[in-house]
Length: 299
Figure 1 (cartoon, rainbow, N blue to C red):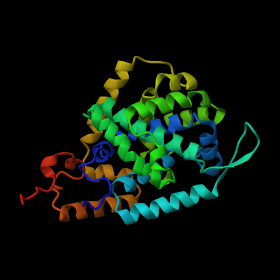
Figure 2: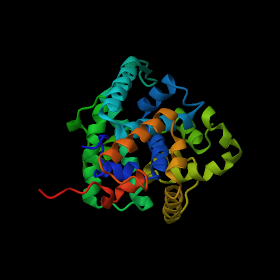
Figure 3: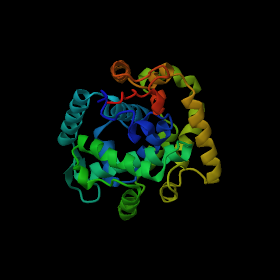
Figure 4: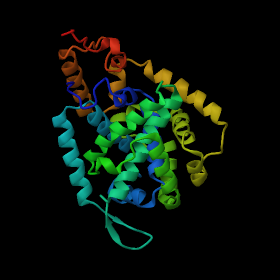
């Protein structure tokens, strides 16, 4: 068995190793923000309004460990995340009550908005996935949902179930003041300290932030009204170009988008997989090719 819980043979690996994940990650934050309680939970318990890009980076680190980390690393991360969520509270502006952050409804919303954003963006960006593979990805992600305290059987595990879930959730969603500010932050974010060296190129970020916004479903864009509408075929073309450009980056360069503990974890994963017979000559992303998997010797 591979050192990482999501083995290279899984659909999860195929989706999460793709660089289109960066668009999916920002899109997911924009989508999550449309749930008032989920948004207030973030707004009241973090420095998101000062460092939205940092939250994206932390989300990327979580997904990286949950996908490529060892069982021990994942268990430690899951325990830490559940402990943090358990200790936090939300002031519900609608009722005036103080509520727990780790409500199953909120955890489920955040999970579904995240993984379905990854899947939809990856497929639209050109990652070849059949309908059966898309369903398998969502089924695999039920296990990830347990890391934050959900029960796998309560999580949508197919495209049909996920679309039904979002349709059912629509009446509960709205663009609060905090959500509108979040969308603006994500289109034009502040950079965390470890990425300050990118500040001179910050104006070049806007097309990326806008691309993430335009990949939202139409009903979500209508709730926000942050940017004027553009033809969706243009968005698809831009998304495919972005994916191709980012996927061409050397893995050693791309890894610097992650915090150092995650970079160290990825290096351990490479070493473990190489020891198991995987061909790492093209890096982790190269393991989407079955020819680089260990060849089974006939009995």
